Picture 1 (cartoon, helix red, strand yellow):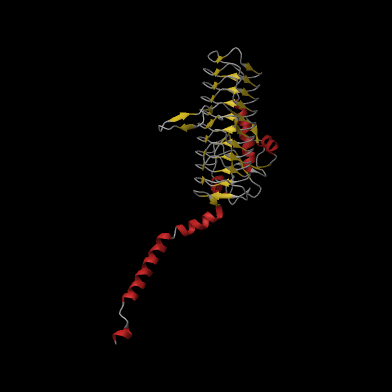
Picture 2 (cartoon, rainbow, N blue to C red):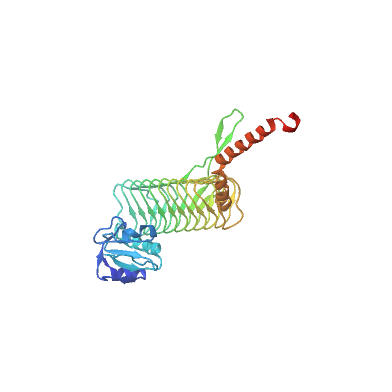
Length: 352
């Protein structure tokens, strides 16, 4: 697919500065460039690359003012990152494979597939599963019994969606995700052993959710583990049984949420954050990476940091003091020695 700067500017609601007829066929990083590619400048720290990139077209924001000559044709847009998202979606659609069902796939006779569905080699679709139109199920995916999948869902290789789980429309589930495995529930016995608690619930994933590779979402003990509309989950996330995540919340890699915790809407959670179970987190909460959330958060739109997590600004002030502790400790010891020396010194008046 070759697109001209003029066509791209119309698509992105931008303006062209340079040759409007120059054409590109793929995106590139600004550091790498390459003739026939389009790149972008979204972060000012990469500005020097704008003057050396070999990309044919460069997306820039409204405030960019070149300090040196730029060889690339510029497309100026209001929101660079938003334009890049639309651009990558446009180029990505070029790779949408046709609706072919591999002869090497296993599809149970009672399963239902909508129109325009592709199923890759060695994929398994079990009894009673319902697949909506336009879905793409890649090689070696497993769809369990009575699973319901909405329309235009992409399921990458190695994904396991276990019995009775539900996936909404327009979801993307990356490689080796496991949805619907048993939660971590065991009852201690008098002899010190643990008895497994059966998990008979399910997982419900609503529309427009994207789940990163190797993430695991446990089925509920009873009822449903629920992932709300528009949630974006990174790779390597663990979500326990009966967890609920509100709409448009984003969670970065290696975070873990213990059972029955409820995360609000539009939260932003950094990497390696841990949540204890059975707490509620208010809408709009922001959690800095590597924090540990050990108590409920009831005030919406606040930021937290640390382990256990505290108010973000309080943490920064506390950490500024913490970094000075070795020097403060040295000064305290020095003052103690001076006080002790004064106390041990003979009284001049009494010795005269």
